[in-house]
Amino acid sequence: MAVVIRAADTCDIDAVAGVLATAFDDDPYVGWLLPDSERRVARATHMFKALTKYHLLHGRVDIAVDDTGTVQGATLWTPPGRWQHTIRAQMSMMPGLVRAFGPRIPRLGLADRQKQQVHPSKPHWYLQAIGTSPGVRGLGYGRSLLQTRLTPCDHDSTPAYLETSNPENLAYYERFGFTVFDEITMRFGGPRVWLMWRSPQQDSR
Image 1: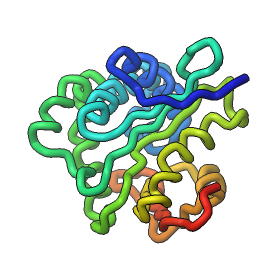
Image 2 (image 1 turned 90 degrees about the vertical axis):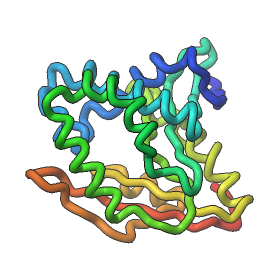
Image 3 (image 1 turned 135 degrees about the horizontal axis):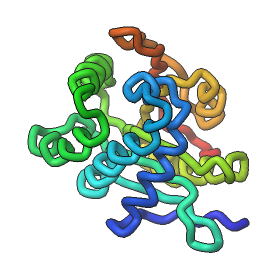
Image 4 (image 1 turned 135 degrees about the vertical axis):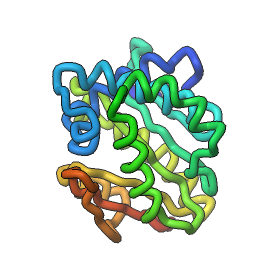
């Protein structure tokens, strides 16, 4: 099965949101924010629609498609110096976030503020989300998506940064040059979140 990586367009928003919502169904951080397991994917889809629309305007959305043209994976990246959402951007995402979180949206705001307090200040590409469909895991979709952005990072000598609440992901990201430099525990009974940094490398994997 061939893996094709391309930049997403507005026509891909629904597919990207669906793939990411399914991929994050068992994520500790998303599960803490959206504890209703039966409605989690549906609610997370609204969240990822809002985030995808934002990144199409202010960042980068890459998608991995199979040989039938079906979206099987996606990444949401924010370029250096733009990881902090402006008030205008926050307002544009609010309708989708309200649909996702309802009365729990204050917790999202507090969680986002807690992560912002430890977010690195040095310019970097920020990987806000990466996910693939369950049926293609282990087939190279995630690797191809990551390298699409990490190779230019190496070429331009730009670091990359991500957060993960899933300990099973740590070794995977380490294979791409990311290292844990700190960790936090989310307030109000939230999960542990590992902060990972990747310095530019001479040889891209």
